Image (cartoon, rainbow, N blue to C red; front, side, top):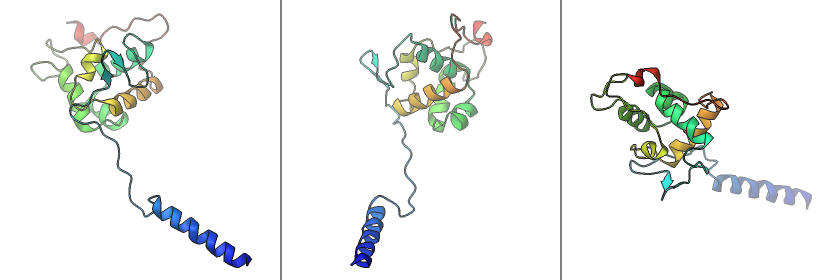
Length: 149
C-alpha cells in the first residue's frame, strides 16, 4: 500500500509540474505597447510614484542622463523604449547633446514617449534607485551640463 501511495504522489507531482509549464518553454517577457501609459488621470499608477516625489526625481535623472545602451542593456528596456527616450531628448535635429535638446522635467513628458509604459517605468524606477540616479538629501537635480547651453 505504501508503494502505491508513493507512485500516486510522484505521478500527481509530475502531472502538476507539466501543467505549470515545466516543459522547457521560456516565459514571455512583459513589454509595454507603443501607446501604453503609466499615468492615469493625473495620478501616477507606476508603483505609487507621484510627480515631484523622490522616486520621480530618480526616474527623471535616469531618463535625462542614461545612454541608449544603458537604457537598453542595463535597465532592461526594450530597444524601442530606449530609442524613444533618447530621440525625445535629442530634439528636432535628432542629435544628442546639441542646442535643441530637451530635458524631461516631469513624468507626463516621459509617459508620452512611445513604448514607455508601466513595465518600462517600473524597470527605470528600480534601476535608478539601485544605481545612484537619485538626488542626495537637499540636493537639487539640475539638468545635464550640455542641456544648459
